[in-house]
Image (cartoon, rainbow, N blue to C red; front, top):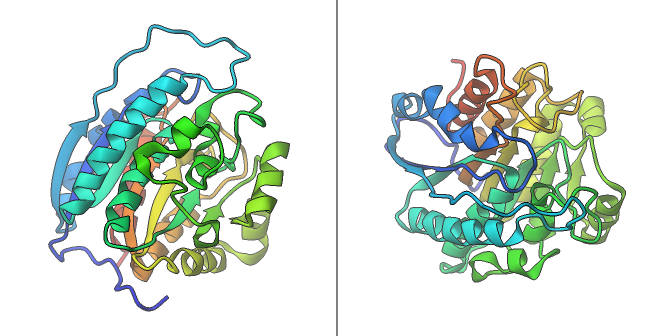
Length: 313
């Protein structure tokens, strides 16, 4: 765990921000405005204040769909999500190839299929492997066979591990994207029965809210980071705002009570910065229609700043 230098602000590292206003992965209006809300909360300016060189690549263009999936459909908007994720993977790969750290802002969590494909592909060209820290209230381990809703935002982690629709598993031309032994999921408290089976089968480490309550967030994050830093190049971080307690982050379409507190979430990201090794970060699922005074978007920005090395002192 000591072979990566801590991520400290002011060292002139370049970051590139890419917004992905995708909402096809879930069923509530408002999540496509998440990238705009985070920009309103001063994302670019506040990262620059930390001493980073910042490029805002604006938003990936996403066409509005004319089709309406049937309520019983098992993979809603599959073609649309695949198309966006393929383009997203190309853009993120370019950012990494240019030596910059990609910051992806969503949009629903199905964007992780494309954003993380891009990072993994860039590092595979250098024969390097990556770990993954996945912070979410949900497992995101459903497939077409197990999904209760047909919403693809409940599937990205399964897809990244090589399970699910071939159209999604092969995004970016690399499959699977991650070895489950190098992945840690943090904050789960709402898991479907079919997901439990896949979690056991893959052996991926889940640090649930029960375990966080018992052992403390700090110890759990140490374990998650130890797992993810086994990747030779470090690891990716993806953060769904529903990992947070709804009292701190009301702007999510999939609220589950009893999540990470404001301070726990910051501690998680501060520990990531301190450990070093983070090669990409994304924050997803901010729903502006449900948010209160842009609080959730504001917190999303603050968490990115903590992951980039912002500290209290």
